[in-house]
Length: 339
Ligand code: KG4
Ligand code: ZN
Image (cartoon, rainbow, N blue to C red; front, side):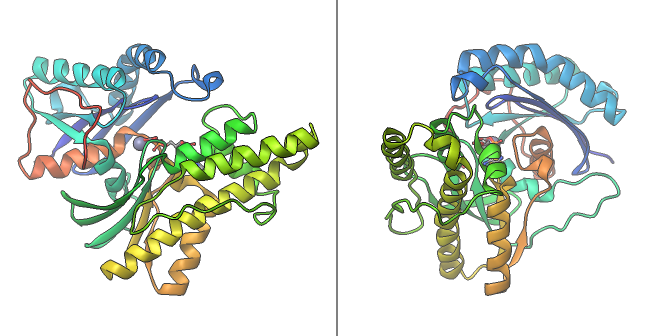
């Protein structure tokens, strides 16, 4: 018996729909929102409105690309949280209506859980290198920075997290200081390739245990840039690549430092990265370097599954479906939803 799930993701600024059959991703459509570029971050009201415009065409296209008829679906999965309430509400309402009209179950998925499950996402005929359990995952996105131990598909334990900004937020806020539109992370990544990672030094956060802090780093970056611009108004223009490479290097080293500690403390060597920031080349290089140094088996999801996508929601829902987990029609979106 096939288990065919339609999954919807709408937690932030991407509207995505995917068809997942027996844990394999048949289609995975993502509609990005360009409306936030000039605001330095996601504007919740605009995001919610754009989700309303995108959700029907994106779902239609996902069904079409997968060649699946609605009446063949086993369940409808959706991102329940965490995320922006107005954005989540669009996906939750759509999923509820569709499941009700088709008389099939609903499965609510935690967005952070799904980012980790992205390691199990793959398409037909493609072999995915999947981690063994226990698996230690550094989850780095625009909204979250966590160290998670996965003991099974549905058993996640958070062992460390940021006490202020997320790593992606640090990238985006520093990019904004350089006049780069949101989301600046990928631009910093690109600019860094031409820059010197040791050109500038920034005060590293001193947080004990396995927690992270990035707000001080952002402030340190802002002060340095302001001071230098006072002396030379062309400073940003002239040193953009060096500034990018240096802040990127610092963020990556802070992340790696805690990941090393977590591996040491737990004894786990099955190690991966997930979330939007895991697309970052310097982070990937640093992980590979550590893998060689410490004998880690490392895992990085395919690029399409690192940033927000419904494929990862559908894969997570598949394992929940097998475990008999169902969500009632009375369900509501949860802006805060700890794993
Ligand atoms: O996981 P994601 O798509 O959305 C959230 O759940 O937050 O992550 C988006 C974040 C943004 O902060 C973006 O700047 C960052 O991931 N990001 C990157 C790169 N690609 C995306 N940061 C650094 N380097 C990249 N290549
Ligand atoms: Zn995300």
